[in-house]
Image (cartoon, rainbow, N blue to C red):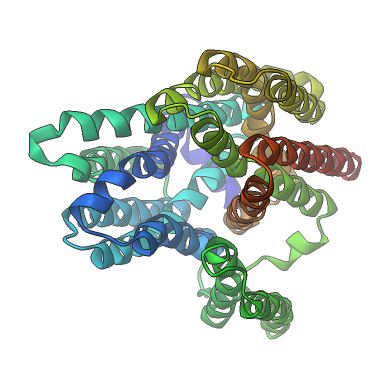
Length: 468
């Protein structure tokens, strides 16, 4: 299959394919940040309760994280182009539904559907890159992918505030969803014309039983992490998470049985024998544990501890996002010459940035947003050096036939890491804040981030030895 795809795409056309799939990734990334900016306005206009507003964000993450492996496997079975177009058109339609929602409950349901369609679309982005770029241009392609991730964050902050403020054609907050409709249709049209078709794998079908069991296991594992703080971390939440762990173990046994019976399991079991891939997943998990949680804690410290207005606090992240973009561009060339060493260097820079933030917070009573923005540039640059080439490094030993499955597993690992980090480190921040102060909670959180990044670096070194 890989040879067929390569033959269909010349060296120029594949860069156009890259532009198409990363444009879809950009739309997906912007959507995550743009909704957060619009949430206060949504709450007022829809008269949504606090629990409903939290669910608008959480249900999207749950749907995406629990179905992304299934989306990746569907790409392996039906071809990345077919599944990408289905997911993209579905994401466009559900974005329109979100914008037309008349109640908090309807918006939650629409966001559930939006997350599910994103789970079809996004795995095909990494799978396409993995299939088309196998030569010396691979690191450059993944660097462009990393740049798009950084730009999506900055664009989400700016576009969300702008659309809600200007109240485009009287649509208010709804425009943050409507903007996906024309963008999605244009990307879909380009994908239909330019993306190469991958032949369907005859005689294969989705492992429905495995997909259902995986969905249930991840839902039990992730759901309590997202809603645990609101429920006071009641004992039953931990029981549900334990059940989720047991279900995931049973899922692996089920997949082995499916393979033994000659079927096509949801997860390509050869991936479990790939030591470099598994260690890379460990690195990705700990990296993402310190990813979204950092932005949460940083925002809380600025607004709760330093009383910085929301707009100024949001603008303080823009230099970080730009540093992330610059680092993503640099990481491609560095990765070609230094391999995974550049990721470890990025971890070291993140730790240096976190240490600088701790020094500022400990020594200056009221640091300005400008000072914090300047210091966060160090962290942002280090994060860009890691995130841009990380997915390519983790997938580097994966066979093309399992690209979709591996990409889905990587996406699930990243989302579980993000959800767990937000829940766990967020809980630590609030606990220390209640006992002492927001500043103390911030410093304790920074120490946890340093620990997580160090563990990530250790896994990267371990992965490098396995690859060698």
